[in-house]
Length: 174
Image 1 (tube, rainbow, N blue to C red):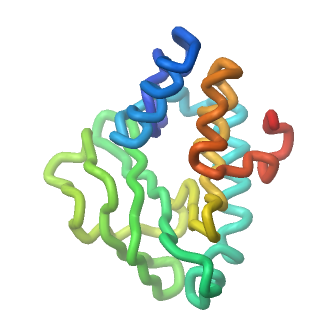
Image 2: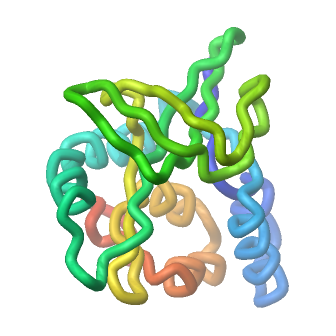
């Protein structure tokens, strides 16, 4: 079965709690470790649908950012030969219609030959999420909200660490 790969380790999300675990969880997120997530998960599917539905507004903001908006990025699904997918963050992107190209902004783990800093061509339909920073707050990244919702309550404080507003995803815990 195809798996969705994202940030963090599922074991940590579902594992031990406490400040040390929270710190470890944040460290793993910042190191961009993989997490396997079922492709048919309803919450993740809803998050991706939300990101795709709001993509036109995101692209308009990326084209003409306000002075306090920066670090625009797209999360792109790259299909593997074995049926799984790896999700890659892409920055410095440009598009003509539905064709995009951008720079890989994390270290791919499963896509052979793809490295951080390489150009990655992709299609609009490959986009699974987006994010940007506005002041000290993260906007978008609804797939991370789903990952954090599966975490024990004290690990959910990671939202505060990233300034992430998960209320943008209907039904997301506050």
